[in-house]
Length: 353
Image (tube, rainbow, N blue to C red):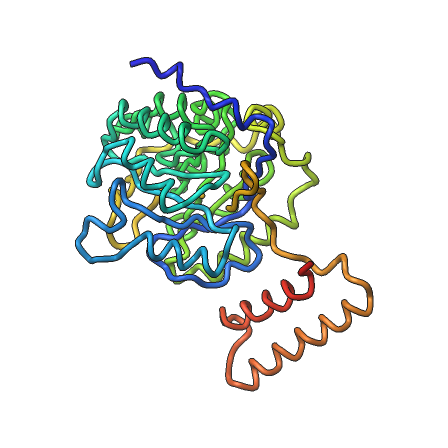
């Protein structure tokens, strides 16, 4: 099988591209506030189907559309590929494009024993239908773990533009932070956007900070977790802590060249394999924007009021104070998602246009 010929399409090389620096993943969760995060990766399909193989009747496509209706271009589509779902690469790509529409970024989680030739077929079909888009794959963080569990790692690295390695345990985190990190080396120079799981790794912030400082960004699993409200604030805060970086790269070919180089971090012991989610089921580990005239648009960051005139800033401050006071008077708390949504809406109104 010749995977070397599966190079990213050249049509999109001159098109501005953007990756979210911070994001959260969605499995089944309904739309809610993601205030402070750049994007949300929402599952929209399950191989060649839109429903779960568990038989619970949940429709990923319907949930994805609800998220799009409420969060618009901040929503990035992702799908599961491989057993127990169908492994028809061409059909799975067609369904992803059908549901997700024209986007600058798509993500696929590669499951257990996904056939290498079908992974190639999936990527080939995506290039045919969306030649300017970036394609990312998510799975175990290293070649050793992935191949031990039947994931065709070398093929994935060859046909996708970037990796979203799942760093869910302390051992995997230490492997990411090693000076000779296999998480980085195994991607053969392609950029990585690190996925963390606050519920399974108490030290996840260390991995997230490294991802922001040295790599393309960080996302966390998952909005479905009860802990989301807490870790969302920590994750969004990293955007303000990171040092000044270069402007976003302007093309797929420039993406790898312009990412900050990986530097040495604390040395740690090598990890042992950890389980990957087998796909549909009760909140497992997972393994993502609107197009304009023939090309994708950058993922927007949340609006900030810094550019407002002093008088407008004062009006906005008073409005937010009134929103908070009314919410508290009605028996709400400062941590309620409803309050955050109302404040987010006020900020959006103030900066619109």
